[in-house]
Image (tube, rainbow, N blue to C red; front, side, top):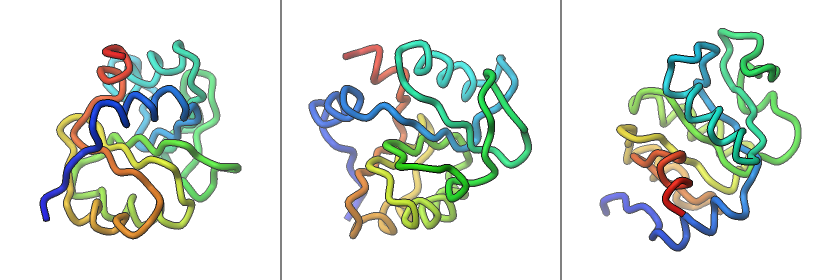
Amino acid sequence: MAFQNPDQAKIKDILQSKKRIAVVGLSDKPERTSYQVSRYMKDNGYEIIPVNPTIEETMGLKAYPSLKDVEGHIDIVNVFRRSEELPAIAEEAKEIQPDVFWAQLGILNEEAANMLEDTKTTVIMDRCIKVEHASM
């Protein structure tokens, strides 16, 4: 069965209730989309946790090499990596059990969605979290 995102009401509910976001692939370069989207979400009251093994920090926030290195529960795993990298990230997400696995606009992988199908994790793909938040 082809992957389908939750309806707009569910996405709105997620954005209103889930405030701790681990951003996989968050850059330390302000011109990058991952930085701009994360800055917007941070400025709108969300806790941003950078997950990127190639940087020490971004936006004054300590970066973690992997999702497993982040302490505490993660509400949303927001992914800024290529579609073919999603299965490996979904596998790691299965271990930490976030509430939501969110792949940004242009990022979609059926295999990753299938991997999370039997978990309590809601999967959203090919949607921009900033655009969805701004349209609430």
